[in-house]
Image (cartoon, rainbow, N blue to C red; front, side):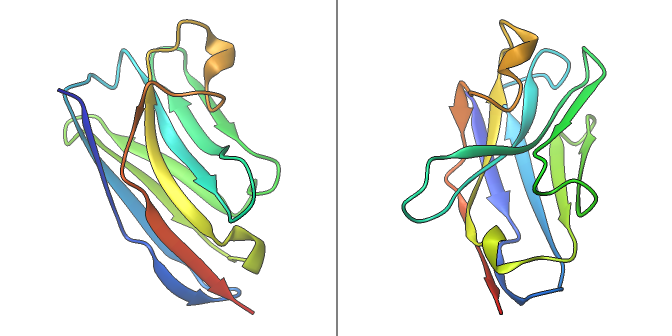
Length: 124
């Protein structure tokens, strides 16, 4: 059984930082693309930052480039999203995600498995 468990969301002022963590079980990071999506109220879920160790590929949405950093610890099966210089537009529920990557173009576009989500709220 695949499980993705997020932690680290919360309320922060604009310009502040938060770190999200996700512990995965039931998958190998070498076989999956893993990362973070988010969904703001009234908007579709979107890929934020994802990584494929097998393909040596990292993806960041343009809106977070230079501010967010994704990293993995394969031994601990943990994926972390460091979010700096947060903006009110970053307010959303953030989901940890894992995808088998049938196609590399699926990275941060779709996912086979989802965590329960963690709320990030950035006040202005």
